Image (cartoon, rainbow, N blue to C red; front, top):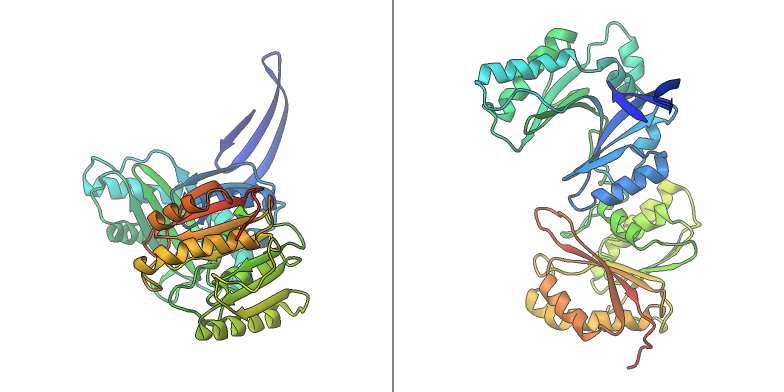
Length: 402
């Protein structure tokens, strides 16, 4: 039996109704923000890489607890999360609804005294470069800001008012300097109805902005690339192909997380291929390795220069008809793509993970090649305010016939 009290885990062994042994181990709680629709994948990654079984999800974020013996650097190396915070207080019920503004703000400010600041600052020190050395220096006064994010319920205050009021309490408690731009520590107050979660940000920049130095108009974030690649259950030495690679975001994420796979990337746009080549060269320079097998080609995705039944997995971001292509052209493009994918994928074991916001066209196109593909999973994700669908197909045992 487990009981959670103030970020501590108490485990009891019960025998005939009596507690016979008692073990106490410290826990640290983290919050990770993810693209909506990728929460399950983020939890699976946390469980696999951090040996953590204490995790739950909400829309656009996950919360998980790990023991003290797990290094914070491992948390920062998660590939599916955009931002990571260390939680210093998670209050399930706070009287901030259906009361006067002054009373609600006073109840919110009182939580600053309950928060585990020592634990949060210790984790922040180990996560931020130079943070530990600076705080050990008595003359160093950190700069901070408070950000408030609200959802659900009817609160008598705005997010700006909550952040300003809570920031005043933090400043009075620690005598830190307020700086909304060049801050060292960011305190995040997340309010959902009557629930309040207070945390310290461990990342200033979004972790999704990695791998690339050249971007295009429709470049996919690295965290989303990881999520759709994870769905494919990639194995060592498999051949992965992105037939519409653009700037190469998907291929580079695959090269980092599955370095023993063979990667093929191609596109019909010369400008996109130049960006992809620059990104690959930069990636190989940073990684200081030549072991990754990455091939970049110019081709027509509907007529791939690949042998029949030679590819293990196809992962690509299809043109939606917004910034790239058109809905009308997709009516002929999508059926041709699926027919070609059915040809090059290995029979019975090949997989395809396709992302598109033109869901109706892809659904109709799938009906034309239903003998070749079995749709295993369909989920929706948030990409820049759009909610495209991720289709995970598996190649059937039906032989391809021209």
